[in-house]
Length: 193
Image (cartoon, rainbow, N blue to C red; front, side):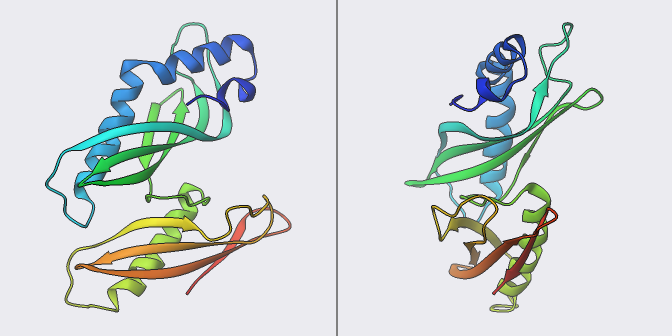
């Protein structure tokens, strides 16, 4: 669960606070509640029980910063992947966590799967993928992105990579290829096909 956390924290004290935070009941309740709520709204519909099987920090984007008077960081950004079992299947959910003095700790559940894209990029790509999927069945009122998978599992950071985004459109799975190309000055271009 915490392999990346201690190495990424600035001080041993902050690392200890971060470990205590991500192992706390309140943190697990925040993450679990957000993920299960999102999962219940996903297609395809699943009336069965949902259970969190595990979670793992996959990236620390901004090192969590603490002050003495708070157990929650006042700054920081990281990403977790949470695995939920639903209707005999495991679904990986991406959760982006943001800490600030003003808002406290805030969690946003993004699209499920392995996408390397940040939250903003996922939102941009998601709009295009959904628009393309909608064209396959204009009468369908319920569609969702249900999986993102890496085509090249070993693509080095800073190099182009491809993901397959799968949409559920009224019972039919539609696949979109998303090609990412990192820009020399920072950021990433993408193309959806």
